[in-house]
Length: 479
Image (cartoon, rainbow, N blue to C red; front, side, top):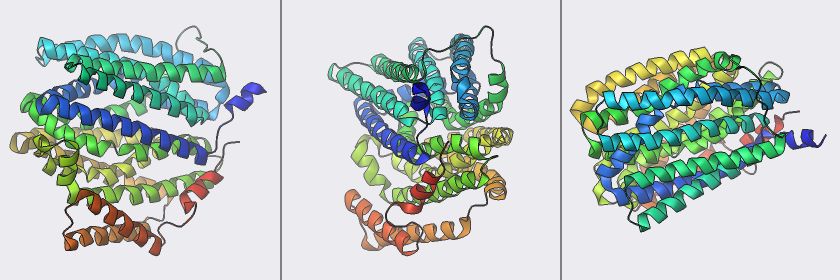
């Protein structure tokens, strides 16, 4: 009985609040680290740092093979299998990760990275290995819907990374030490997650043999993740080979600002995925309610970043990175339009995967990856990192266009009025900034926020008090 109580899930409402708060704190800590790194390293060295991480990230889905999402889905349906499934997942990953280290180093040789670059890639690789193991613990935690464990682990890991980076900057350290900080932060994240999880469920069980069903279940997720990583990270690797490290530094300055915002979408999706996966067959109305409100808030929260961010891009780059990074302004104005698109495609892809349509999601991701590579080959020689930004936006639009009919048919969200009223609210807010000729970043953000919220309330896109999202999401509870 005590173990059952410990494993009793929180409501999605509680989990969303916990995870959003944790990811907001973690994102702030990551922002502090990136802020310090970009200014300390400068465009060229920061570009080399970003290249090493992006290169290794291309191989993370292969090291995972979709095992973690399969683990979340299977455990969400039957929590009694957690310890054996997690043990099996770790055994499979041990074999995969050993192979990945060799593959990464060989590919780095083929692409003619020099000795120093290969050393940086190798350190980043070990950081990826530790993160891959950690992701299995987090997948189990999400299946149990006890997000406070993920929250504590994530914050401690990111806090450790920031502290280590600040110490290294104070000591005048170089790129190698900065990547070691990344590795140590991931290790701390994993150790804390492991300790918290095993305290709740007891020691893991490692069955004899391998549970290849996890790979079979997870392979479509793996293909989706691989394709997604390719079209999010291949541009950085291509820029490093085709243009140079400075271009990578400018591009990733804009890129990091945009994709830091993914914590908002990831928080909702992390909670919605196991609920939709477990409730779709038995309680479609509950699953549909979660999706509908996820759609509403993906749009409401994502679009103002694109509209307002386009107007305020120069102020953002100047404040965060300084004058050395002003070439990033145009790239930010372009790539920031991926925010509302990714908010929606992230929800769409995970919702479709949660109800067993992961093969369709993999197909969409595969098409996107191919288009993105072709666009980068065409645009980078002509427009450098600004071309990569265009390629990313076009790729995301394509994925959204393909997935939208699928989710509209299944979940039937009330999208017309929500979309129209949200667009109008943003257009009015950004038009006011143009009319008033607001140049100060802080005034611009304040005016935009106030006008936008008032318009959303006036149009009844959102409500006062607890808001419809939290109220309805809180009604869908695991028994």
